[in-house]
Image 1 (cartoon, rainbow, N blue to C red):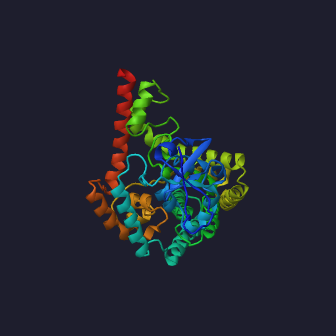
Image 2: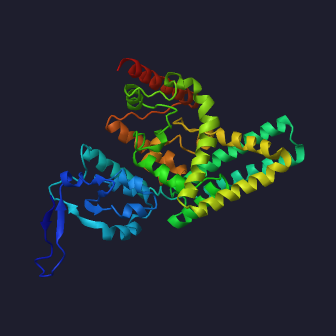
Image 3: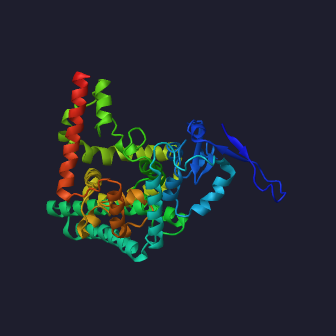
Length: 413
């Protein structure tokens, strides 16, 4: 139960009574129709606000009944500005005897991480380089222009088409990394500017939806790799991932596909079908169902530009085939740092640093990396880096391991 307290009695002023809550009470409010969370020891009722949250209500729902201080700091580039939305939602504070962290969190580790974030701020690592992102956008536009010039001057022969497809695929992948930067608000100081350019990059350069991406990707960052909360590990019954999901599927005798062979059919299904087919259908249907009309207009501009450019050379079917190929050849991994690897993965080879500091401009990840490694070493947390080739091999190996776990549970449990 909440506890009452008063402040300002010595001055004789009449101030609103402050209610205090225990973690036991707060953790009960983690339902879809009843959501409380804690930010810097203050308790907020976000049940109604969640529906209007720009990042989607699910990401708030994942933090319901928990301390959301670090998530709040991680997702907002100007927390003081966001406080004006929180003020009406304030219902009290943590009771004085309650710890600042909920459940089984290591309080010293949390404090050390917050000290690390303060260090990063003092090092200006959250300040973006305008030149870096300007050149990055320019090189994407240059690849798009080069592809059109090639087919214009050299025709539609096989060699030209293969080179053209490779250039377009590279351009699409790089545009994907760039929209990721703006989506995380890591380029401009003002959120509104990031949102505007994000819509242009993901809409006009990729034909996707900024709102769809935000609602999906922020859930991933709030609860990375947690089954049923992270949409990135929801593989539509096509794959089973990790250790718990395949065992759960096996015990329930779920067999949508022969998962013990998923490491073999991965390359047949994931690149050619899941990315260009499923995601595009999901994106378009989401824009229409949720009335993301601005996103839909940007996406239409992408398809109009693409087909106007390539139908005169390849026809409708040929242009569709080219579009499918250019959308399919994209991936990312935890891999060692090099100029090529940084460029190829959009600096998402710094997975640990990015997930700790999602609003940090990616060109600064290498600067915070030694401090992150030191923090991991202090608490015995493994900091793992892999060469590019080994990262791809490990993907296949992980799929095989999960498939074997599913088969064992399916047959014997």
